[in-house]
Image (cartoon, rainbow over the protein chains, first blue to last red):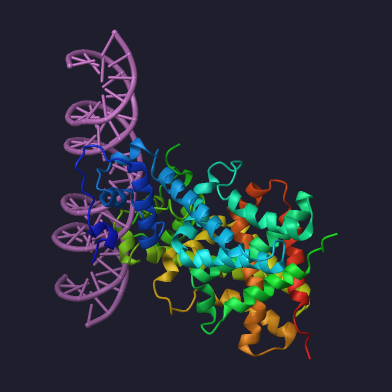
Length: 210
Length: 210
DNA sequence: ATGTTATGTTAACGGTGTTAACATGGTTTA
DNA sequence: TAAACCATGTTAACACCGTTAACATAACAT
C-alpha cells in the first residue's frame, strides 16, 4: 500500500472544533511515523492526517517541522534514560557490570528504536546552535554518575577521558548495527560478544578507586 | 541569501543542445550541494540549476534522487580509500602505527567531509536491499589488509574480531565529532588524544604474529 | 539521406512546508 | 449574563519538490 499503515488507518474523529491536546497528539503521531517511515520520509502532512487535523494546525504548537521533531528527540532521550535506569537497577553501584549494562542498554535502545535513534543523532538538527546544551545530557549523566561511583574521580577531564571512549564505542556499535554495516561487511558476524569484550577491555584500563 | 552560493552562482552555459557529460556534472553538482546544505536539504532541482539543465534531464542518467546520491556515496568511499592509502604510505606495513593512521584517516575524512560522511552512513539508503554488498567494502578492505599483515591471521572470524572494534571506535568518534556531541557534553574536551589512546589499547590486545 | 537512438526540453501531476485570513468557541471580565 | 478576548482550529494560497509523459534536437548508424 502506498500510504503508511498508520496514516491509512483510523483517522482521528473529533466531536469538538478544538482537539483537546493536539500538541501531545502530534508528538506521538510524529514518533510513530518516524518509526515507520524513517526520519527523512517523515512528513508534517502525514502527522496531520494521523492526528485528524488540518495541515496548518501544527503551527499553533510548533514553529516548524524541525521544532516538532525536536520534541520527538526529547522523548527519545528520556525513554533511553529510563531504559538505562531499569537496566542498572539491581546491579551493584559503581561495578564494571553496571557500567557495561548501561552501555549495552544504549545499543539495545538503538536496536529497539533505530529510526528514533537516527533522528536523535544523525540529523543536522542539533547543529543549528553549536553552543546550545545537548538535549541528551541527562541521559549521558547516568553513565557519568556510574563512573564517578566506580572511580571516585571528580576531575571533569579525567572523568571524560573515561566516559568518552565508552560512549564512542557503544555509539559506533549502535550506528553500524542499525544500518546493517557489520552484516554487509561480514554476514556471519556476531557483534554482541565483541562489544562486551571491548567494553571490558576499556573498563580494565580505568584507575581503581582510592 | 536564500539560495545556496553554488546555485546562485554561475549557472552553466551551454552552446550545444546536449550537455556533453551531464552524468558526471550531476554527480559533482550533487556532491557540492550535499557538502553545502547537508544530505537532507539537498534537492534534485538545485542540482539541475547548478548543472544548467532542466528539471527532467537527470532522469536520463539516474533512476531517481536516491540513485544519484548513491553515486555521490561511491565517490565518497573512493576518496576515503585514497586518503587511507596516502596516510599509510611510508609507514611500516603491519605496524600498529600504520593501523592507527588508517583509523585516524577515517576520522579525518569525516571531519573534512561531514555531510558526505553522513550521507555515506547516516541515510536509510543502504537499508533497501539488506543482503546487497556494501559500497564501501574496498575501503574497509584497507584496514583488513593491514590487520592481516600485522597478525598473519587468515581466519575471517578472528580477523573481524579485531577489525570490528577498531572500526566501531573510529566510526563512533567520527559521528560524535561531526555532530558536536562531545563538545556539547563537555566543551573543554580534547578527543584527539582519547582516540589515539583507545586505539592503542585495542591494538595492544591483539595476538602477536607467529 | 534517412531512420534510429541518446539525450535534452516543456508541461503537468500530486505532494510538501509554511503563511495569511478567517472561524470557532472556551474563558475573562464588565 | 453579555460582551470582548484569545487560544486554537480551518481554508486557501504560495513556492518548491520529485517524477513522468510528450515532444524536440542532434549525433550516429545504415
